Image 1 (tube, helix red, strand yellow):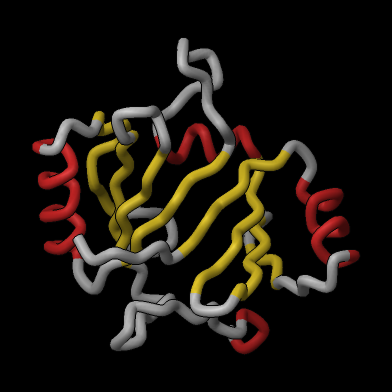
Image 2 (cartoon, rainbow, N blue to C red):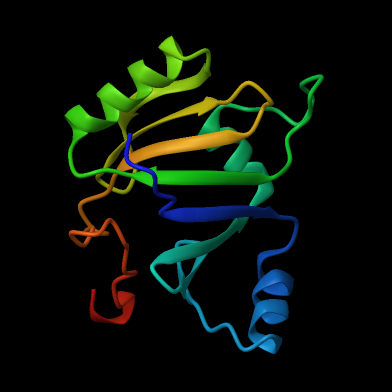
Length: 144
């Protein structure tokens, strides 16, 4: 697994309130399908409804360790690489919370938690190509 974080997703209670807060900080984002994407250097900050995020990664707020509402994403270049990273994480002691599978956005992703319960998404998203250095650029959704 390359040492890289591609996206940080924050599970928010109110998407519009959260977006307005980040706009007041000077952070401009694009909203697509009730999700706000903000370019933050070579990574992206994503704002998404907390309930949708918990369902997506297979973690419940009711679990004993709770859910922080934060998911770190590591994007890779192929579905095979998703499978390889997921297998390596499980071998290292991670708990797979959602096995890798096709996604609603046309990609392929799986989720695990590390030994302290921090959630990770391992994803191949053909719509978010990676540069040679692993950085990610959010596409201009207005052109879609």
